Amino acid sequence: MSEQSVKAEEATEQAATLPAAGSGEQQLVRRQTAVYVYEAPLRLWHWVTVACITVLCVTGYFIGSPLPTMPGEASDSFLMGYIRFAHFAAGYVVTITFIGRIYWAFVGNSHARELFILPITKKAWYKELWHEMRWYMFLEKTPKKYIGHNPMGQSAMFVFFVLGLTFMIFTGFALYGEGLGYDSWASQMFGWVIPLMGASQDVHTWHHLGMWYIILFIMSHIYVAVREDIMSRQSLISTMVGGWRMFKDDRPD
Ligand code: HEM
Ligand code: HEM
Image 1 (cartoon, rainbow, N blue to C red):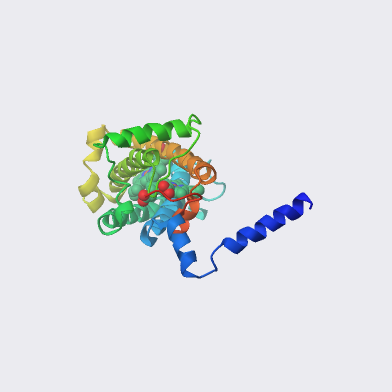
Image 2: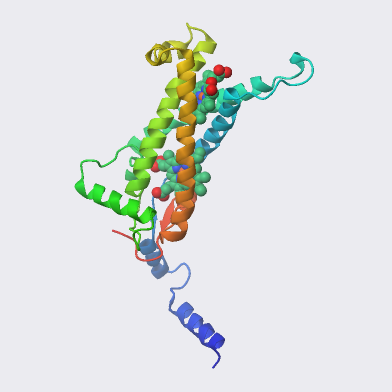
């Protein structure tokens, strides 16, 4: 028998041992290899935030390094005005949805809280963090499996994203208050940030640096999401789309 037909025969045998589609047995297999992790509001928040942060970084970059003067009459174009408008609109959306995300940490499942609460009092967590660091540096041969975030991802998301975005919201609305006027709600609520940092220019500089801090996170986050999707024997990107974590081997308890 040729090698090809042996393979074909093995494949047919394997298919015959798989449970029939839709059967109770198949559902059991699904329960053993997949877990529902991220609920719809969390997933929606993730992708709305991705869109907002992209707009904020592109428009913010141009606010900091404006394009050369447009040719023609000044009143014929409103380019920087549109760029600033897009920045402020995305700033509002990212802030309101972030408040929604904090609310979801209270009412959602346990995985919705992982972004905000690092188990820093648990000794075992540091051991797993160390293992994960070694795995990312290609020093471990086998990945550990996690139903929610792994300790490394969880720490990066908290330190770079939760703290970074909070900083950008406070400094952003402080600057926005300057434009709205000193008696505006934004100035009343966030105006104190300006003297705390020195003067308006200092807030601009820190807000600008904050963008690069978040870009650093985005670059490593996307790299890791794609890398782990391929290497960790569990799903990642599709989990943030459909909510289910699939495991190629047995799922962890
Ligand atoms: C991740 C989120 C954000 C990023 C990456 C970002 C980025 C930037 C950057 C790079 C600048 C230019 C700073 C400079 O060099 O002078 C800027 C300016 C500004 N941003 Fe943001 N920003 C973010 C969030 C926000 C939020 C939430 C608000 C609140 C509305 C906001 C309001 C402003 C304002 C008012 C300015 C100054 C505009 C001007 O002077 O014309 N930003 N932003
Ligand atoms: C501006 C860009 C992005 C930002 C700011 C961002 C931010 C975040 C945050 C804060 C979380 C934690 C979610 C939570 O626990 O609520 C997360 C998770 C995740 N993100 Fe992103 N993300 C970005 C882009 C992307 C992109 C482009 C992808 C896909 C390639 C991606 C894939 C994922 C995945 C797979 C998870 C879940 C990780 C896991 O299952 O443990 N992200 N992201």
